[in-house]
Amino acid sequence: MSDDKQDKLPIRCPQELANGVYANLGIVNYNQDEFVLDFIYLHPNTKSGDIRSRVILHPNHVRRLVNTLNNQLENYDKKHSKGDNNDDDDGLPPITLNFN
Image: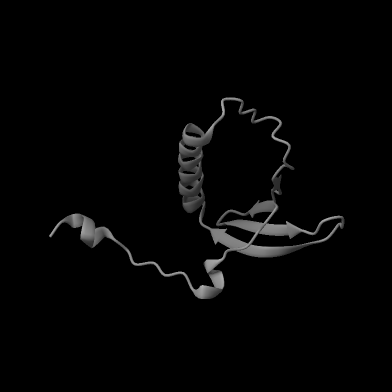
C-alpha cells in the first residue's frame, strides 16, 4: 500500500457550515500568542455589521495560511488573469488591520 493512502486525513463539513458565509470585511487582531481573524458582513447603506465568523490561530498557522493564500492567488492569477492586474487600485475597500 502506498504512503499516499496513509497520509489522507478524513475531514467532514457539517451541513450547517457547508454553504459558508459571506463577508465583505476582515479585521485582524493579535497578541503574543494568537491571531484573531474576524470575518464581518457590513450591511448596505448602514454603519453596522455582524461578525459572521471568528478564527483564532497560532502565529505559525498564520504563516502557513499566508503562504498558502499567496500560492493559491498566484495560481489563480496565472489561470484567470487578463494581464491588467493593478493591485493598488482594485476598487475594493481595504482589509482593516487592528494591531493591539
